[in-house]
Amino acid sequence: MVQRQSYLGKGIEDHLIYKRILENELLRRIVTNASYLLSATGLAAGMSVFQSILAGRLLGPANFGILGSITQFTSVVNRFASFRMNELVVRYVGHYQEAGDHPRAAAVFKMAGLLEIGGSLVALALIWGLAPLGAQYFAQDAGLAFWFQIYGCIVLANVIYESASGLLQILDRFRVIATATAAQSAMILALTVIIFFAKGGLTAIVLAYMIGKIVYSLSVTIAALIEARRAWGAGWWRTPLSLLKDERRDLLAFAFSTNLSSTISLVAKDSEVLWVSAFIGPIQAGYYKTALAITNLLQLPVSPLPTATFPELTREIARRNWDNVRYVLRQGSRLAAIYSVPVTLVLIIFGKWLIGVSYGPEYLPAYAPLVILLIGYTFVNIFYWNRVALLSLGRAVFPTIINFCGMALKVSAIFLLVPRYGYLAFAGLLAGYYFFTVGAAVIRVLLDVRGQAQVEPET
Image (cartoon, rainbow, N blue to C red; front, side, top):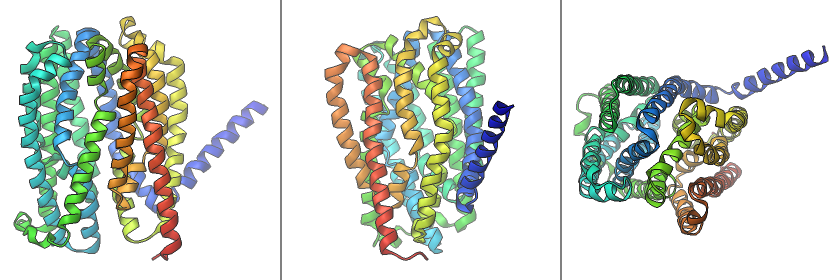
């Protein structure tokens, strides 16, 4: 009887925690927008995990690692040439929309689109030029260079995807992004199922990935152009860029800072499969890719929160509502922790069984790096707002500096630790990188918000 009452008391307590977290209208709006993305992301992640399992069983660890090298190679080069225009659009279009300055908002979106088109063309040229080296060093098969180039053509569908995504966020069209996300995953999964039962190979899987990603990018882009017409009229694209002559320096500084930060992130944390494949080989890369795939279960509900939080923080900081800013940061972390900590414990306890049942016994070496990665990703989840808060505060350079320091330490340690500990070293270094960079960013945000709240009165 006592035990039953304790369970009842815990249930009431959990209910009250959620009620307190969501009592603020701003946080409710963030959670509502995130829920649109989460509903799609949840479906997408579930389908992605199932699709990953089918691809892993069909291809085996070596070809599964090669698949990761092909897809991540294009992603890395594309992001190297991009300027993270979604962040610039959210930051500046959101600012001008809030001020009612629609011409400047349209001009920012136009400028972002033009810069992104140029970056996409540069990315395509780099992919085609570097594909032979990518195939030789990452896939360890120079004959696969053609498929590195073919897959790289998806950047042509991404010409203004980032700018489009940012506009949909600032206009609260999260349902559109959610629908496109779910449709992409469903298409890739359906094609993978067909390929699996048809006993297809690596080439067919690469084509399936391409089709899904092209459809997704084009859907988001078309939707954003429709919303731009609704918001600013049919002739918005004729808005002169000269309207931004006083802000041009700040806009370009923001764009190049976020581009540099993105490039650093690519080296430090977003090209892990390429690092493992280059240093150890495709088989170990396949194990590592499996561990990363399972961590998606941990990141699933939290991954939409930065996207939903960024526009709201930008608006509240522009209004100098520091109490709301602090509330969102504190309760957002609490909400993320309520999910992340228990899920991490469950995945650590049952992870080995999950890998064996889903991917197969040959993938069991993925368990050890999985445990290490889960610890790092749990920390990231709890402080998911660290980067978007810095950008909303106008500190685009700070994460670049911190990420560069973290990258330098991580890359230096790779040469010292990988020869001895193999892919476990990569997992440990990635977790350490997150503790260092995210921790520094969180401290900077909290100091800034506290300082501004003391200096400026609430409005």
